[in-house]
Length: 302
Length: 302
Image (cartoon, rainbow over all chains, first blue to last red; front, side):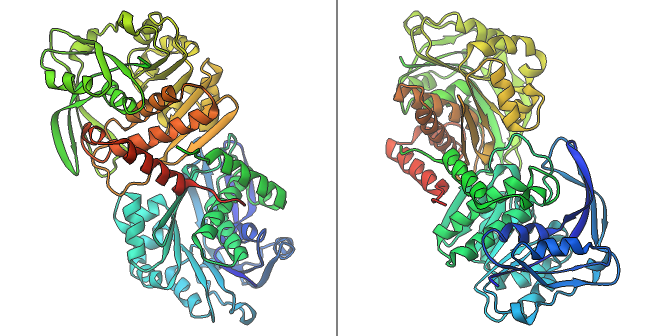
């Protein structure tokens, strides 16, 4: 077990100008685990309700994802209903039913506690903190969060920051957390509060990665068809930590490559609804698109 | 004379959270000419009023910019008053006095009419069309426009498009012109209406360049201090066409390099008010920042 991922497992109703799905497999832990599973072994820690199809569990298990930490509780699975209009950068939430996720108390199974890489996807920072106490020898801890926690659990979030290696947030969250508009300064603010690195995700505009004294900036993979952006950020984070765990070191070279991989994985996810596209990839697809992105972004010598 | 640039010459009052200037040298033709002048010889075509300081004319002339086409008319110079708040991506206009610019009728001096490169900065598309008839052997024509012309002079704009080589617009303008939200599709729409290439500027998020069947995507140079974004887009366009004219060919390699140069030049402009920063550069500054950007964006092999 190389990477543990802790976050939401959801059933989503999503509508976009290009179609809609109901009760589709989703959630931060699902997108990120599937993405990471192309590069390393993954253990998923989460909770589902009695309505969660055993087929989905079987599906995850068949993809290099250990589900021993996926609790099955009384009640219903976390359910998100939302839609996108022409501006795919903006998700509109119609309804959020936390259900069994409301009382989620993540427990990392004994067999997974020695995993070196951990992705704390977006959950209550108090729970993120508790998870950290369950790991015996973490090497790299990646943390995501959201506007809600920055607003109502700021102190808890600031308490967990010094214990993680890197924060991955979108540009709006980076600005909200730091109180600074300039993204370079926002990243510095976050690093001043503990983490060694920061990734700022900018959706269709790509991402900025800060690690030690270096910066890596990369655009998103340009797509002329985006069907459903749900899960793009989690797919990025999962691809990033999965690839990084596969490389096995924390050098800037590996960070750069992993961020490129995360970008590529996210570009696949948005090409179809739910996790559909993420399920049909093979290593050659990933490599080919990485190389295309490399070619698209290559700056010739001056 | 390698590049002709036609656009506004202005005196700007600008206020940002980092200071303010009054009657500062500005305008699309000024920013782009100064930017281009680091790479090739430039001829500026524009109009100023009697209030325009001869020192400014002397300044331009001293920078490899021929000002024979800069008309001095009765009346006052084009004057823009605006401000920026913390979100430097958004300019707020307080007042626009067209003054002599309202009756601008660009005349390209005989001695400049054989110039191979032309930048039609943002002016009325009818005037842009008329300028094209004055050139004897154009090789590459770059056209900028704005939301106003897309709205009120759409037909005139569509008439000029087939006569230019490349359009340079920001993302909002590309969407408005094409009626399409996805930027890849918006670029394709524009190219379907005539131009061989398109550049979409995305401010702090960088730029996308489309030429023949290739794409180049590059982020902006990350800055932790932006004092005044005025003129960034024009500086980009001027640096782009200046560098391109310096290379002398229309290969994708040269397009990529020129877009990198434009990005670097724009990053200097925003570091201070008006054209201040643009006036104090030397070739080593430009080369060093280009190489930094190259390093920041370099994707390692998969």
